[in-house]
Every structure is written in C-alpha cells, then in structure tokens.
Image (cartoon, rainbow, N blue to C red):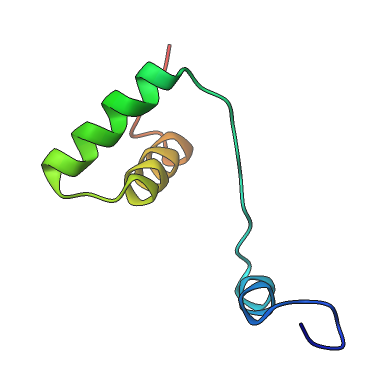
Length: 63
C-alpha cells in the first residue's frame, strides 16, 4: 500500500468511478444464472450491467 492507504486497484477504481455493489440472493438462483451465462459465453457482470441499463432506460420493465 502507498501513503494514501490505497492499493493500485483501489486508486484506479476511485479514479474511474468504479464501486463494488453486493446483494443477497438465493443460492439456487445464482447457480442457474451462472450456468446460463457460461452456456452463452457471457460474463455475469456484463449481463447484470445490461439488465440494469435496460431497466434505467425503460427497455426492460418489471411489474
């Protein structure tokens, strides 16, 4: 660590506006989602980001 107490990764994240979000979900749901992403060759984080973007811009609706 450096004088500011941050690792290089933490400094990069801070500079680029990255944060870590965590949430709770059922293990079974997480496993099914992981498998679906693997089968489609997608990263879980990329899929979650697209879902979030779609919800924000209104293209994905949840009733």
